[in-house]
Image (tube, rainbow, N blue to C red; front, side, top):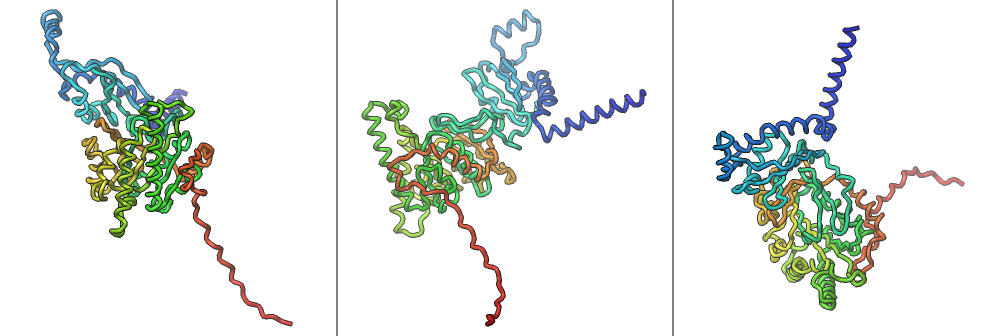
Length: 448
């Protein structure tokens, strides 16, 4: 009987160890909650002071503190690290709020994130300044970007669209009120189209007008025609559409001047025009021309886009530009247009120069992170903003049919705008089926 109980206990231990091993790779959230979180919390608690000293993240104490330590406590005066104010566990990691002492700034901790990550055995460490004098260390216990799934509470609202997941477990949102114009870059197969699909899927649920410019004959945006207020599929029509958008922008400015306000959202609800998002699939197609006679039309279209980027935010018109490469080599006006695009998302690219075009002018430290994206992880990107901050993100996998189904479901939200009537898509662009091959019939002789 004793032997049987021993074998049962050993079997239970083996099953438990096997279950934890399985959970580590198949259910990382469960493994983190059961094993990773207690171990990391304990390691952080016991090694915090020594780790900060080794990493050079300490300062000399104040004169009063040094006097009290030397004469009252009778102990050695040692440099002091940031004070831990709060430790909060999450389903993906650990968040620690620190009160910075005089002489230490958030940039000092940011420069040491790799050393802190290895010291505490976590996947990543991100430093976020919450308020003056306080920072939050966001530790991630496992690879959150391996299998991306947005939280259930992440829903589009207002002009905010949840698009991807950051490596610290938080949701990356596209907020058109904060970053009205944006640029998304990425090579073929990098996940750039998936990012755009997730964005359109979220925008389709909001009361906004969507305008598509897809000069690849509509192969990308044609399937979303049921939710688009306008769609053009060649550079000539794109030029005419941009001229119409400029005219609409000027009319909206007249409405603002009439009511004595400077922003669309200050207007009364009954006279406020509907917000409008312009989705440009491949920006290079608007720049490249095959003959010199097409250059004036190209230059006019580009300059009109620059005007939209400079002024259209105040009247609720926003640009969402995508491309594989976007630099001065495209032609006149490319750099001026890129300077108006506040939000930047760069996927895997074919050369370092493209990464520098997207992030070099706003977050130079993020360029090396872009070039380190593995080719077998589509959807992984680096998102930056004009504040100099950046983070790794990854969009959840969304099929074109799924995004198209959402567009059809919310087609009733498509506003009927008279100025866009000439460009209103007739219906979803589909590939005609191949004609059936007639069966081979052997001739039969005619007999009387």
